[in-house]
Image 1: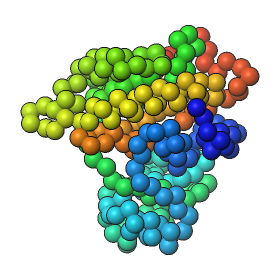
Image 2: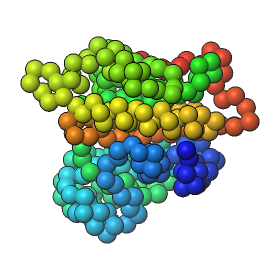
Image 3: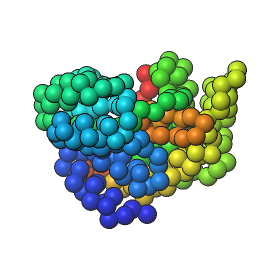
Image 4: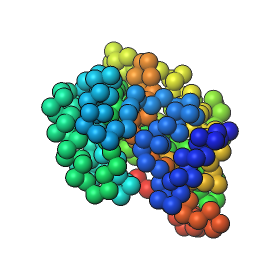
Length: 242
């Protein structure tokens, strides 16, 4: 069920048509999804204070209502490991058009997954799970199911991936925490059912899965352009991965 704080985030983002990443992560955290420790900072002093509290190395991302694809403009910095590097990153990001601050968040590691949801014109809310990185770009290793998802749906999605053995532990590697992955997918499924009249799509890419956690490392929510009209037209593709 949507809380008042969730509704305020969505309402404040409606005119823009998408939700800024810090707000998206706040919303997902409220919905029970695991997100990295993060801070949305607007000054160098705040950035330094937050990075020291979170612990180096940190990930830094530009926040701008005019930039939805941060990587395309060099707006993501991984492995920022010192005060000097952090300040240099902040000053570089502050020159980006529409700069509204910087996201400072903890570094997490594990198997990269892609998780998403889309409101299909024919099937309604649909959830995607796939192997991230080259797994989705080259091998198109994904599984789709209509929401709401039950445990049996999620189990079949995981086992339906060509590379599912990577998740279960392969050649001595530790398995990812499948209970946490199942919980993440269940919570996302419930959230999408609640948001189906409000959103077009959700992309969680990557979700970093380890033996202990499944963490939403990057998040994007695209809102419906006009809630009075059907935003997905017949002929729109369910998911475009190429």
